[in-house]
Amino acid sequence: MLKINLKYVIVLAIVAFSSFQGEAKADSSQILGKAYDFGVLGGSTVTNTGPSLITESLGVSTGSSATGFSPGIVNGTIFTSDTVAAQAQVDNATAYNKLASLIPNKDLTGLDLGGLTLTPGVYSFSSSAQLTGTLTLDNLGDPNALFVFQIGSTLTTASNSSILTTNGAAPNVFFQIGSSATLGTGTQFMGNILALTSITLTTGVNIECGRALAQNGAVTMDTNKVSNACDTKPQEMAVVPEPDLSLGVLGSGLVGLLFAFRKRFRKGW
Image (tube, rainbow, N blue to C red; front, side, top):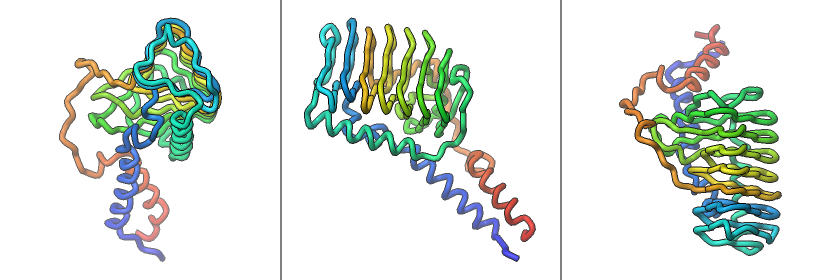
């Protein structure tokens, strides 16, 4: 009968858990490549109504039309149908595929993101996702923590919805969307939207600490602000305790892995 040394099982489990943590240490610039330099990136067009503000560059590829600037303001550069925008779209697609390939920690299909408090990880929706109210992201004090939302079809937010962060800013938040995103009026959004098709920002939507990156379709804007700056309010900060390296704090992923090994080989222990 096969014998398993618990010591080696623990080592293997720690290595597996550390591998996920390694993914979580990747920052947005590493993931996005040249798309990192863009606040808004459209596939076919980018259209704007009203005094929108994009703090980074704006790009369109393979389309060539960016309209409504002015009255919209782009603090960076506008690139349309050129090699810069084309490379940004290549890197956008690479990032999209990388995010889609990550193994999710939890399936949120059927749940509304509003009212949830989530810690760093990879969360999946088999079809559409909805945000009504407030989603809270607990950064656990790690400035490089990674939040990934894999959404099979559409992302829709209700009017005046929001995403907040606790225990520090959360600069590495990604919504990988299988079709299109529509953010409802007044939504205060946080994170990078990587949509396969289109992105619609309705009146008064603001994106903080992120970008609107559409691969194949249009980005439509109406009096919005898109900024990659991450602003954490003092009252949202918390004291981060010294790390406890005991087995119980290594995380549910480690405990689950140990349990699986024990269940598989319990007759040999």
